[in-house]
Image 1 (cartoon, rainbow, N blue to C red):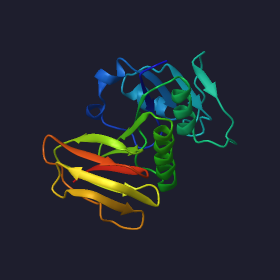
Image 2 (cartoon, rainbow, N blue to C red):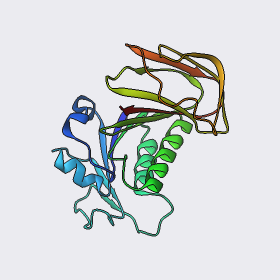
Image 3 (cartoon, helix red, strand yellow):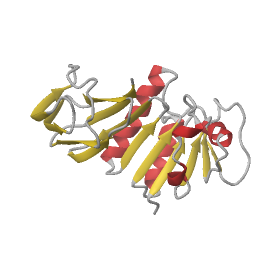
Image 4 (cartoon, helix red, strand yellow):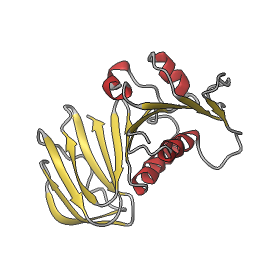
Amino acid sequence: MIDTCVIFAGGDPVRPETIDRSIIEKAYVICADKGFALAESLGLKADIVLGDFDSLNYTPTGDKVMCFPPEKDDTDLMLAVNKALEMGAENIVIYGACGGRIDHMIGNIACLALIAEKGAKGTIIGDNDIISLYMPCEFSVAYKEGFSLSLFAYSREVRGLTISGAKYSVDNCTLIDSVTLGVSNEIIPPEAIISFNEGRLLVIQSRL
């Protein structure tokens, strides 16, 4: 069983200052395909490297490498997420999963949905975006200077949505998947408190 797993994926790379090394030092590290190159560029070592390595363009060597065929049902990131969940990770932090192809980005958000459904916490962290997805609960989102807060229904409806500690607060609201009501809110320091009782909620902080 592991508490925290950090995954490096093959999307847009992140700057060194975006990485929280205090978390990585205590985490189990998985590199998915081209995420291996990202970790190496940041001077970080992997506990497992996996994927079909079509993006990396070569297959790493060593007993830490798990090689999969290109003709597979899961993306490389989903393989990494499943491995982390299999090992009992309760907190999964993903770098290198923003930007690039829009179909890959949507697939990466689907990985967050799986993490939430399995009862763990998942976060995609990029230079300009922080993305997480929640099942019904109460949680906080810390203020980050220069970033907005946007909420989207990742199910037909999110019911009982309550937001405090933000410029636009609501109480017992229903958010549906075909509106833009939750876009571009502002957190009032130190944090926003969000709760809901039905549905799946996508939370995005984006650099302004």
